[in-house]
Image (cartoon, rainbow, N blue to C red):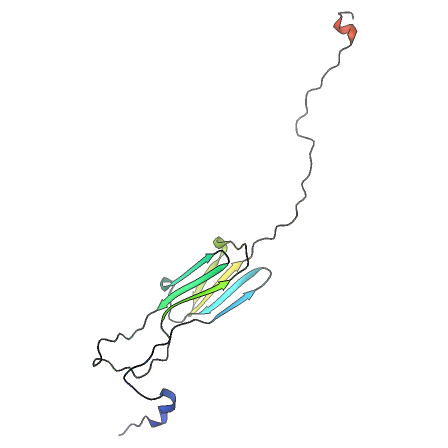
Length: 153
């Protein structure tokens, strides 16, 4: 039986002994509402251990690394036909509104999709300050007359 790869040539391109590895840049969606900011990023093959998330000022940074699973030992040991998947380190920076609380950010990773939920802070509403007269009354001062001072009753 003879196997011909000719029909697959357009799919795989020309076979060769080397291939350039594309850098990995995960696509991301950023949705901003009045209540929160949600960032959804495709990170297939990542675990929580090889992702890092930081909020510094108004910059939300997601970084990580997807290692190349094929280690080239020597020119004669392995022939790379084609590498189409992207590998390497990445860093995505998303500008977010001012005043976000980093303690309230939540992150989840499900089926290769990273979702960051960033609630917006409560708006500072005007607050009416009530004026009180005080909670304790000062002792009353009794008035004395000149006659009482002179000892005349």
